[in-house]
Image (cartoon, rainbow over all chains, first blue to last red; front, side, top):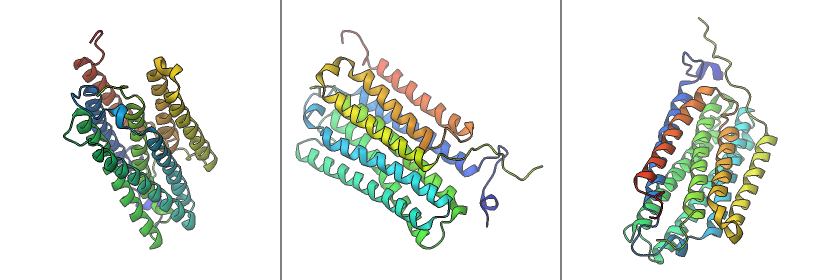
Length: 199
Length: 103
């Protein structure tokens, strides 16, 4: 079955699933926009520590940021491999993307664990509440993305991820890259633009 | 009436472009972290980091999410909510006095 036969085209000539998915990503912009705004509004307004300057680990987060950026590269390479019907490299890059996503989650779990042991919890101050809510929502999205990528990998091993199914990989890729761009903003706003010394 | 889809999407970039973008993203991230640690940049930290972050954001959206080559409707569907989110963020920051002089 060809891609043209399986596509769901609209009067615009564009695939309805892709339009719907971009609309979903637009709605996600509003979700993360509200979470980031909330973080910024309450930045520096905590009455007790730990403060961002005391607790945030920039070198560690820089490595996890690089890890997520490279996962985006692996994702586009996976899509390119699926589109040209290269099953082996499609599996390699899909697996690499999922692995890099899992490593990012590992960094985040370690960060959350160390913060809790240093006294920063969801309830201890406004920084803790807004930080864990924002980065927790992002981590949840990464976890969903990893599961999605693993299902695509399984479909590939089942021989059900040929070039005619490239749109399925493209939609997963759009989701994954969106998660990446959200982290680009979070890394700058939360980690690098922190209020020095402020709670 | 034609059953064929409109030819509104150009071919996606090649592997070379993807690798180049990844290299640029890596360099920008290194510059961001470097700027953060250099005290001389402290007065200009916010604008520098926002420009670098915006550049990374645009590169991923244009080349990895293919908005540079895809139909413009997708760009509109993404950009309009993004601008609304940014406007809401700025409005909230003003509303809560984050930009207030002398606060």
